[in-house]
Length: 110
Image (cartoon, rainbow, N blue to C red; front, top):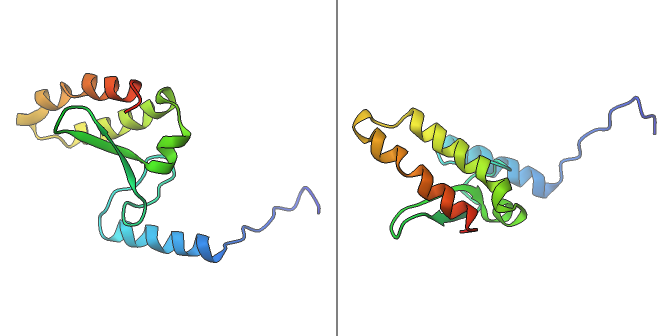
């Protein structure tokens, strides 16, 4: 094989199904894993509870298991910042107060 010639991407049946499911998830407005971008339509998410009744899920279970708490933290921060940008003004201070709780939970491996 010539190193200067790019190789073709081979899409297996499994990969094709994954692509179709992810597209369907995006069309339906569902979220996705912040790391692998697989849709919540078919991929189980990992919920990190930061209070007894509140939790967040920026990562799928598979990606969550592959990362250390320090490697996970940027995905939680990115999700937090995206939500902050669309947060209603009357809820802004309450929402901002959640970040230290989320950060603590992530660092504890929850």
